[in-house]
Length: 226
Image (cartoon, rainbow, N blue to C red; front, side, top):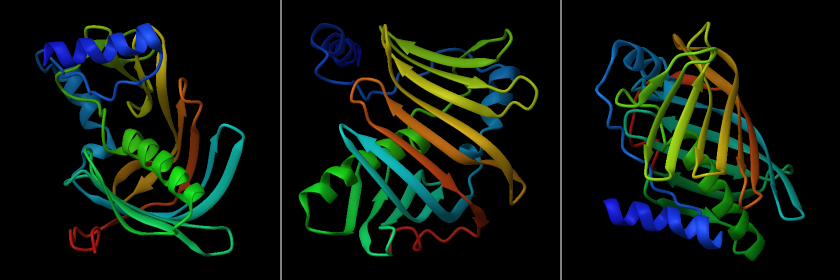
């Protein structure tokens, strides 16, 4: 594992032509504080959340608004995303895991394909990968943080000092690579779940903002993939 991680970091630092996607492993001993912070994250709840969303995607000179339905299964670490145009046409329907995306339907248009790939990357990083963990190092100052690093690759998660809710996670080498912010937390099935999340890729220039109204649902793993 040592050499692939080092190579990924060097590719970014030396040529700026790639963004490493590896999630550095946590190596610290679990502590009551790290367990409390990581445990407060709704993405570790083991429940399924579903709701309609509206979104704005920007890349290069493109700006696209779309809407649809997002289902997140925090037990299986899967997401199902259906994207509709503002007029209601189905643009694409995908199931995501941390490692891959299964495309159920997609309009056969190059622009839609490019859009879909950007949305898949953003949603995966926002909701399925690079999650706060109990083996992350803890920093306690004005804002509690959990972090884990391998060589020059680091993940930093910042929490609200009063509520313990996750406010952001940032992936970086010597410079920020991408960042996700979470806001507008509301109760959903006994959990505080963000109704707004925003992704920004500092290198690629992509940004995705989503507003979501999730409800906690009974677990039915067929419904997320069929």
